[in-house]
Image (tube, rainbow, N blue to C red; front, side, top):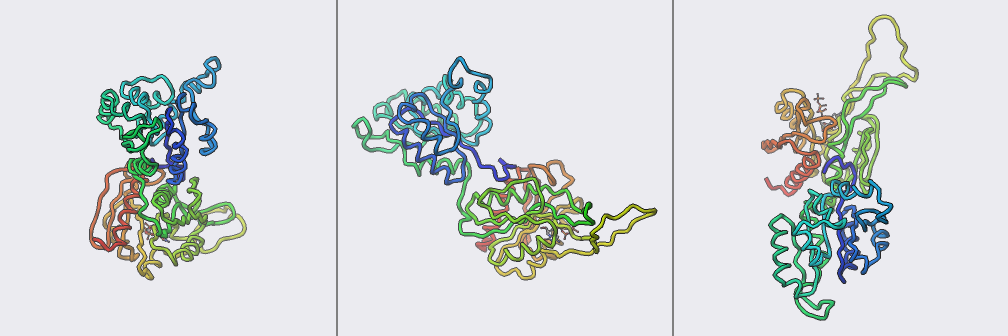
Length: 409
Ligand code: CTP
């Protein structure tokens, strides 16, 4: 999940052959609004109802229509194992519309085309939205297949009742696009609870130049801060990410402000903090910079060299002194006395919460995709989280920010 660094979550949308196949185009749009990348997979039957080109145009991606490439004769290894690659890449498989035939195949493990093979090959959660004639829907075989699929953890979005394409009335009409989209969102844990909020996040290291070729910096990769920005954006916040130099990419819609030195970060954060509802300071900021930065390279000479350093602005502490109603979250990356240091920083910086971690622990700290953190809250609570992906830590931090904002203790 994490490490996405701005990468979208991927959903495979399986379209099987039914009149409702055209509605899948609308579902593509709806899922894209949820900031999901959609890979469409069509059965042969679906292609009788809608041209793959429709989906290719909507998704900007090749639509998968066959298991073995264009023609069997030209099948190559790449297309033959594509279902495995797709299966591993996706976060969710949703089949809409799902015909009685597809449900029967899934229930029985038949894998005779790309979609059914993908179902067997993926470990991602699966949702089906059936659509068919009422008699087919009510048939004992279909109901038994649905039971089998449900027992396996497949989520079924019940069809609506109404006029069916065959002229009959009853259940069998593809569920509404909103119902399918909310099943997808719920399964992926997508929320919109930060809509209307302005959040400023800092990330990465800062760099202090010593001379034109040398610099002082630290090992921060920026992954934690980028995960926070990513998670906040997915939950609907307006996000400004003030970032020191990193290799990571932020989602396009995030207001990305690249900076280099602590002073640049200081100026950028101050400016953007004015109308922010929350500041989450995950950057590993340089506390000192060379007192003098020469324009020429420092030359080697005999004996020791002393570099005089002067303190930089403590951005978090400064904002803590003029906190107002903003929620202020700081981080503490420690190598020892984690709790002690975190509690001290909480008080010294005037933050609402400090997210502390012991960077010497396996699976925590710099350049890892996971973190092991404890929240130290101003009200005295201390919440220790188990090791989890940084993206999940980010969501827990945001949950806490929301709770603090509501004043709920
Ligand atoms: N921070 C900041 N400006 C600084 C230094 C730190 O805004 N000049 C912020 C960091 O982004 C982090 C928090 O303060 O959210 C704590 O940073 P940390 O480096 O752990 O604390 P320091 O006060 O620098 O203490 P020390 O380096 O001695 O552990």
